[in-house]
Amino acid sequence: MGVKRETITLVGAGLAGSLLAVFLARRGFRVEVYEKRPDIRRVSTGAGKAGRSINLAMSARGLHALQQVGLKDEVLGMAIPMAGRLIHPVKGERVLQPYGQRDEEVIYSVSRGELNRVLLSAAERQDGVRLHFNARCTGVEFRTGVLYVRDDATNHVHSLRPKRIIGVDGSASAIRTAMMNVGRFDLSQQYLTHGYKELTIPAGTNGAYRMEPNALHIWPRGLYMLIALPNLDGSFTCTLFFPHEGDYSFASLLDPRQILDFFKSQFPDAAALMPDLTTLYLDNPTGSLVTLKCFPWHYRDRVLLLGDAAHAIVPFFGQGMNCAFEDCTVLDECIEAYWPDWETVFESFGRRRKEDTDAIADMALANYVEMRDQVSDPGFQLRQKVGFLLERKFPDLYIPRYSMVSFHRFPYSEALRSGEIQDGILREICDSISAEEQVDWDLAERLVSERLGT
Ligand SMILES: Cc1cc2nc3c(=O)[nH]c(=O)nc-3n(C[C@H](O)[C@H](O)[C@H](O)COP(=O)(O)OP(=O)(O)OC[C@H]3O[C@@H](n4cnc5c(N)ncnc54)[C@H](O)[C@@H]3O)c2cc1C
Image 1 (cartoon, rainbow, N blue to C red):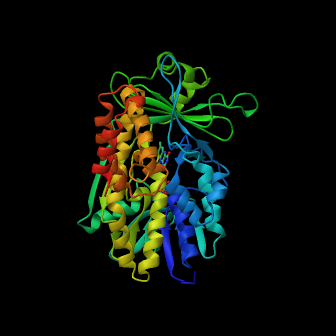
Image 2 (cartoon, protein in one colour; image 1 turned 180 degrees about the vertical axis):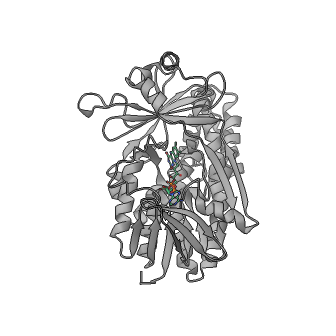
Image 3 (cartoon, rainbow, N blue to C red; image 1 turned 90 degrees about the horizontal axis):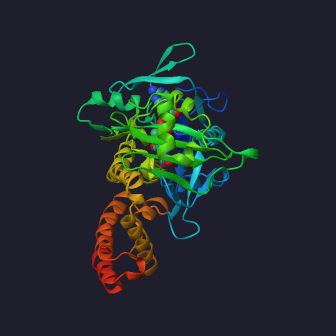
């Protein structure tokens, strides 16, 4: 793609930063990457201890970005397909709610650490990429363009003068914090009253899975829930999403006996598979969940925010990383269209993404209620089945919202708008029936063509 020889400085070599380095190098830029952590390929990081998810759900948007830089097959080789949600009630039969209705409509469980390692190695293989570890950005002076980076090994602070900086330093971004000093910068953050804690179901004998591996397991309990995603070694990483405060909360559930009793009564089958439950519960940190929106994402032609630094969302749609990877795709398209006019590259990137990242932030919040509560409701289950019937009957007009987000790359804002219309249609069709065989197809056809037809 031609040698451009300009240098772009990235702050953060997490999921988005390491992938973005690959995209930029393939366009011929030199890339200097400053990452505060040590090189995770050489040291064990204990992702769980750090309070970040050990595995993640990857879907179409993430896979598309990986495909563009030739990494899709490598990542799929270390991913486990999940065909649906496997619902665990307190008593009674488990039910699989498929995510889609075609064989390829699955999402994938991938290890955060392994994925980051693959992306770092891919970045390092590119000409012109240099990775600096233990290099923590401590601030930026926007007007003078000075970037301060502290070497965590020596505590020495270097003053750099990069021409162009991209802040891919996650939800607690130092670059974003510095941006607040330049004026007319909007920022809102909303913490959930619920937090999360990671636990483990270890593998059985010879690495055997002790539950169905090709599903995302959910124990929905109304005000809280437990989920589990499979790992390649036969274990499952479980996450308890639970209130921070209150009668049933992280603040009140502290005593080992109480913890065990609570799990045995609420998640009996999971508790039976977790020999280290109380130790893990007490040792592992409790994480917070935040939705963060800000704008503008750039300062002149010098600084841009991307990924969680620009738009952190709660994890209930499994889209934060997918969205950050889609950011890389869109920025690449903006560079193609407007480079070397960097201000227009940055400005058009923000203009194209803002409405969509706001939309996925809102859908992710709404999905928490769906996952912890509605999935066990017969009315919700009926609407989901009828949604699949509508997709089969009217494939050009009706694609369920979950599929639009996870199996296609429709703009998130379009998925949000269509989802609201679909919900209205499904409620009108389903409110007077109790099984999918009773659908009034004349009504269905009229509603779909009136509300979703062009
Ligand atoms: C519990 C949980 C579950 C999740 N599950 C999913 C899921 O299933 N699917 C999904 O798509 N998304 C999921 N996400 C969201 C996903 O983790 C994020 O959206 C994704 O990691 C964003 O990538 P990023 O590179 O922008 O930020 P990060 O991955 O956070 O990377 C930021 C990097 O910047 C570095 N850094 C930070 N500050 C500095 C500094 N001052 N100087 C230098 N370096 C710095 C950090 O060390 C890190 O390496 C989940 C998130 C959580 C919390």
